[in-house]
Amino acid sequence: MDVFNCHFGVIDLKLEHPLSNDQLIEIINWLNNTKIEIRILDLTSGSWPMFELFMNTFQKSVSLLIIIERGSEGEGIVHKRLNFKIKNAFYSNPCAWFSLEFLFSMETEYITANKIDLTAEDLNVFLRSWQEGKTNRKMKKILLTTCLDRDLKKVLEGCGGELMDPRTTKHKFRRFIRDTYKDIWVYGGIHIRRDDGRIAVIKNSWNEYETEDRSAYQERELNRNYLENLDIWNSLNKPWYVNEFRIYFFEE
Image 1 (spheres, rainbow, N blue to C red):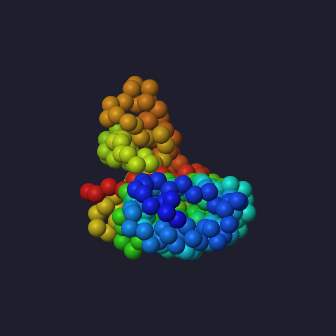
Image 2 (tube, rainbow, N blue to C red; image 1 turned 30 degrees about the vertical axis):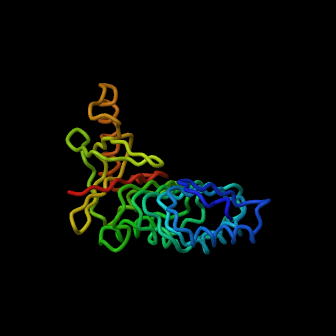
Image 3 (cartoon, rainbow, N blue to C red; image 1 turned 90 degrees about the vertical axis):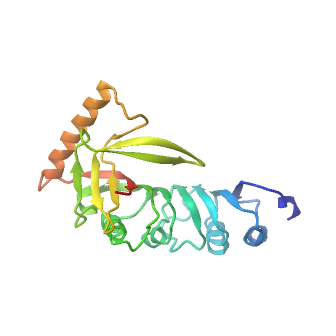
């Protein structure tokens, strides 16, 4: 393993043939024992047994974990818990194995998980747990896309959500992209509060922009979407089906 005896910021691992399990174990053992900091760990998984082996054996903390899956070998299997620390961000696509327990085990700032199979009830438990300060306390942004549409009203049930007017409500957010940051503006959204006063802003339409000023067209679209969403929000019998849950977290 002397070939790895150098400074690195990115590790790119393909978990598939011709790599063998024994070779993977040797790599993992070396990584676990090295003192070199790992900024980005980029996994491409073409073998579910290898992916399970890695996730259950790897123990080194990383700043950013990226997981790209190939094939459907692991469908119907869930991964219970993260066994190592992710300091900054997690990204996975697709992510059928993603579970509520796995989400709770991540104390990281930015989470993106695509094509997950969490139910509206699961997502509600996640938000309620965050509100009560039990889990995911460091989180700054999360993006979850579900395999099927979920009723946003059921997701927010009991959370005290409030649909905000984008004409009067905005927040500046520092977005993380791979290993860089960029400021954006988030207008309106659905607000829920944590016990310590922190606010979660749930994006409900195209309500984020890279500049504070908006064009006349953007202003019209933002207001139109708000009024359409307000009608659904206030209705007692209209569900609000979405498959994307993009949530920003702010100090107040």
